[in-house]
Image 1 (tube, rainbow, N blue to C red):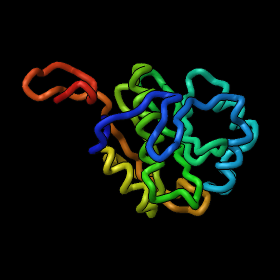
Image 2 (cartoon, one colour):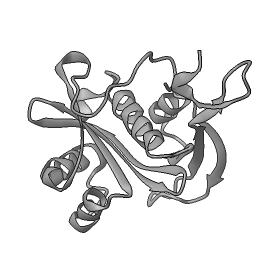
Image 3 (cartoon, one colour):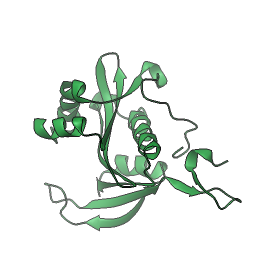
Image 4 (cartoon, rainbow, N blue to C red):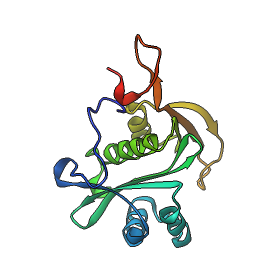
Amino acid sequence: MYGNDRGSRGPGEPAEGGLRLSRLGPGQLAACQDLDAAALGQLWSTAQWQAELADAARLAMGLWQGDALVAMACGWLIVDELHITLVAVRPQQRRRGLGRQVLQALLAEGQGRGARAATLEVAEGNRAALGLYGALGFSSRGRRRDYYRSGEAALIQWLPLTQPCPGDGADNTIDRCG
């Protein structure tokens, strides 16, 4: 579990508010590109999306409302680290907790595949994203100057996905403590 939420749902399971959570793959290329364009101004090219959705070491989770992809989160599993590469929510759906839901699903998927920590870069001025990541337990561990095309710096954020449970000293997943 990450942050104050008391549960995460598995892929394909109904999410809150009539939404459906699923893994994303090559068959959802058009939906991913559409959401990327709407939410992020087309951050990735078609070739980048094809690689993201086809590579087994890359994880992608989506939140659907009917046939529309309303939120997604992607990451690369590198040894025992989940490097989060993208979190996007359709603009008219923001401030409803959808980014949190899809990011929690990605973190759970990464942890299930052996990730012991998650990392990401976030624009220093992106207060909404910093609030979300902070609520999930991420903390800043560094700064990259001029990281974005705009010249804005990025904060490097980390989240341990395992921690000792109080009193037992064992290394357990966060879900199993308490």
